[in-house]
Image (cartoon, rainbow, N blue to C red; front, side, top):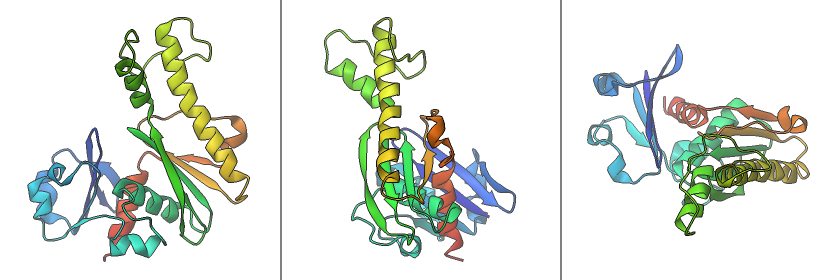
Length: 228
């Protein structure tokens, strides 16, 4: 039995992984000492990792320098976030032998392109939908602070729908444009989308897109399996 920690900028997800699969674990403290291995992805700073997790004798904190990361990926850029490393490993474990585009729509919107041989070809980072909405509020005098929940028409009919439409649809079009650009260079491309801001995409692209909300966790599990 493994315990997997995905510590992000806004929340911490903890799951148990065993022969029954991956499932959420709220009372993780009572299972910690029984764990065969504990794997952590953390982008929120060392202080975000619970002390008892750090002190666990079989705890491994995944980084771009970790041996288990290099089992799956080649030429990892220095400083690549552990959530992106884990998501990239998860994508490779689910779809080996393909060029992969991994899109994580969370606090930030991240793109990673992985070659069919596991080489990290590069990527980009831009604001997630809530950061876009927050920036509009904080850097103007009159625009309200909104979240992404609500109508987001292409043609907004008031300030709120215009802001949401710009943020949500703008991010979707950014993602679709990125997919089309990479697809033009790699015909074997498969796309994984993860993160809290899920959305629908054009029908022409749907066949190469897999929505996988547990991609980071599945990457941690693949890394943990490599340790045993």
